[in-house]
Image (cartoon, rainbow, N blue to C red; front, side, top):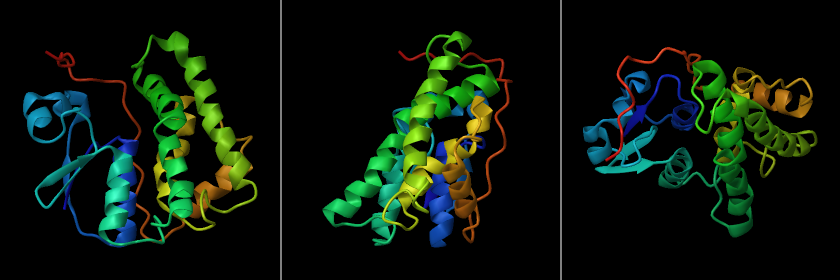
Length: 217
């Protein structure tokens, strides 16, 4: 199994966390995002047509999108404790996985990239308040759950927690304080206390390579 990842990528961190929780050996292929290695014609043609990380390679196939990778790993190793196959349990877990790719992505992830790298996906730094508003929507939903439960789904750790963890952990890098979210703060501590929890990526840098971002044809 091979993982293409970025050193600063929270989405890549999710996959490292789950693989290391399961004790699965894997090859790490570091993609330099600041040199746009994920946007090269070769990477797009042979690894991920979306030009993004993470990408999980296994048995000659490539799987991209962090949520899809989490589901693949849980199913491949038949870990129903992390992702049930019965409908209600699966839906309870996946609703949080999907939120990680909506409010958390568009709020916390994009806000972090804007603050730390001065790169704004939509518009400019003037949109920072909008990113933070979306991020607070995610944090509010999580806090509602975590004030009365240890985990996001099923009262045990699942891929729901891993999907949401990285960019909530990095919320301060989007200039969002967690002071008003005691349930989330306690949950972060529970997650990081799990044995073999993968180490956090380094903080992003504002400095890009001199080369411009490749333009799509």
